[in-house]
Length: 118
Figure (tube, rainbow, N blue to C red):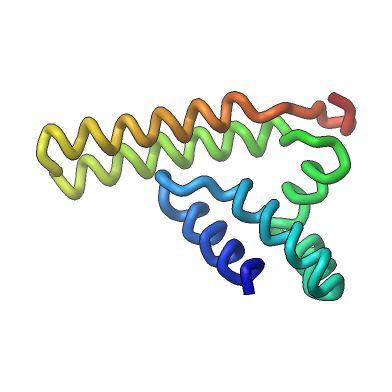
């Protein structure tokens, strides 16, 4: 049950800049590995999520292109949110602050080289 919750939160995190994707997917994989190895294998085979999870499990890091995609996504979504929602100054500052926290988390994740080595 928890793995399902974390998959949903991870999927939401892929869309919303305030929610992180990777930690939720790692938790989902953790719980699936213990409760349903078959579903965990399916998650690891996923075209979009599998490579990120496998990199984390095998190399304890993320690739540069994943980091760049995450950073660009956060900046674009935050900008579009502020542009189209036209929130108050306080709300804009809160959105920007949360986005900066997300960017900091992304930048602090360990990286791996394209060859798979740290």
